[in-house]
Amino acid sequence: MGRKVVRTKTEYRSAIRSRKLIKQAYVDLTKEKDIDKITVIDIVTKADINRGTFYAHYKNVNAVSEQIGEEILTALFKYLDEFKNTRLIENPLPFLTNIARFLEKDMEFYRVLINSQLSVSFMNRLKTLFVRKILSDEKKMLAIKNKEQFMVCVNLYASGFAGLYQDWFNHKMKISLDDLTYNFSEIIKNGFKHFLPAKK
Image 1 (cartoon, rainbow, N blue to C red):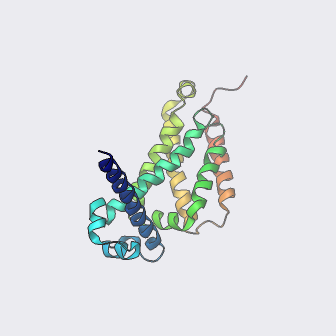
Image 2: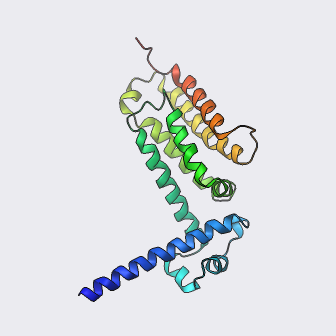
Image 3: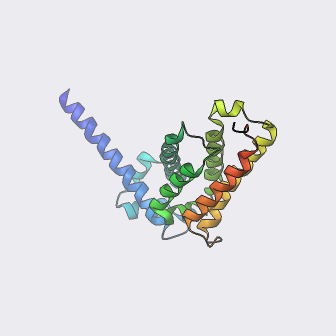
């Protein structure tokens, strides 16, 4: 029984190590070639593993990129969960600053990801989560005036949020990430202001 447990733990650690090698190889390759042209052979060569090991964990290259996308979103929204009890509509700066700090950890990879074919799916999910985060303050939502117009505004800012970062990563905006974050925060804050009850 003891040997079986040891073997199971060893196999588990080996599987974790293999997946880590595969994902790291994929990330490294995104900085060397077109993300849509990365092959299984490229990955196994870079990771120094055999094809059998790759297929034991992933069906194809897309499965690797999808898992990385999932992990990015999970990590990003762990950051965002810190703002459960803050007034996101009234002060979005801490929320957006955390996103900026997250992106700064590997700017080149996010630039490649945002410009790949995977970006449409990734950005759509990011926008959906952004909207959900704004609407998560149920108490605040009950006090919102003109809810239909408010929802149009929320979706507009969500799309703008994704588009702004995409343009920034493509060097279409000659502005620092911190300045982009601050200015977008002010636009959101001022845009939502008239939907909120007047402060007494």
